[in-house]
Image 1 (cartoon, rainbow, N blue to C red):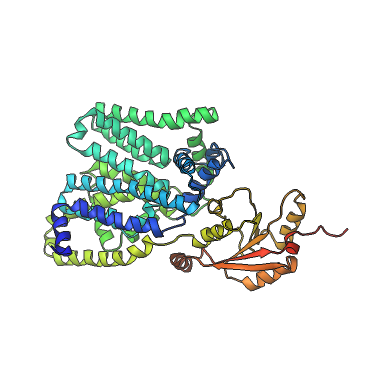
Image 2 (cartoon, helix red, strand yellow):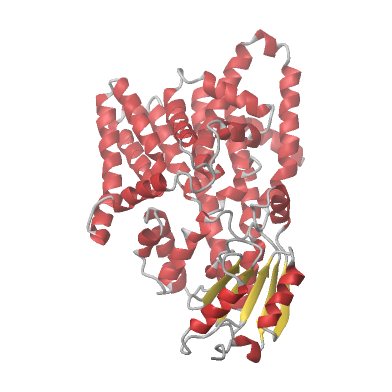
Length: 512
């Protein structure tokens, strides 16, 4: 039997198997090739604090005190890294291959239960469409292997929704208990999913489903209290310390980070789901608000909350996207199949889907294999192989802030790091060196980030540090270069690494 016939038979008889195989293939590509980290938070708020605690450089309690973040998700990484250390695995890249594999397997739950939800509600055709979108939408495999709480919290939300909408399972109190526990688990990963929990409870209450409401609410509260109550009380002496600090931090820093208009996330959905298919999906999503409240209102409330809040970052709405896809596909298929206009234009709909999948297939392998933040990671990996590193200077005198190095890949934590920016001129840096006691070691490696004015910066640098030796250049990844060209805010730039010679390593104090 030819491969094409096998695929066609699977698509007709066992579509979920084919959908999962496609999802596994591209997630495997991401596991192998999509090294680095996607954003600041999936590394510096998860991987970095967990490993530093395992290595004894910081206490594991510092997950909560250094960052306004739940201890639960980085805590899972802490125990996982402890296990890898016990097994003798110390290489950072090897550990991240394993971690990406775990994340990829976890993400498959969303595909399985997303397909089941749509098949249950809308039938086989929309289930296959939604399943493929959840499996190989152009950005999903790459995001699926990241250590993002916004991705990690999705599987429990999708399973909980399946239990609540299934006509047979929703008749059993135990499934409301399981749904509550799963939603509580999602909350412990990502606090904003409280919107999902609250609106699910409200819908059950409005339906006068008293047993379901109390079973769901109590079990959800038990899961939340077990982590945010008991654990926080044990560590901090007060329940819900992490949650209250997180709220306080975000209120006081609502305008500190990227802000945007109210409609920003809806435009984002139009873009990432690719027009004109994105128009069909959003139309179907909003059209179905009354018919499928458990699929619509929790996810819409989540989108509305983030739309109203000033701080807007693309990753914030990741938990809602699977629900937009599932309900959008259901709603669009129901509408188009009952519309005389669209029934007379089936070729147009088919052409739109062909256009979508052509673009998606072009982008999918490129994004799935992108090495994100390559120059930052490889700079630390290179220095980790140098046995004489005792201090690093990061020279970015053309910027107002320096690039935070991912110390996880340096595999050492007691290295002195100094930043040299517009706000900290060369003279300031020299004075800071002079102020360092003789018992501390001065930096002996320097990383120049970015090609802008690199020669002028280097010559100015050599006037103070005359003895430096060039070591290597590390280029950013292909997609890093593309993203930087699209928006210079994405500072993933070329790294030039130099080493101080003995005379250049120490700055003598000024003459009196």
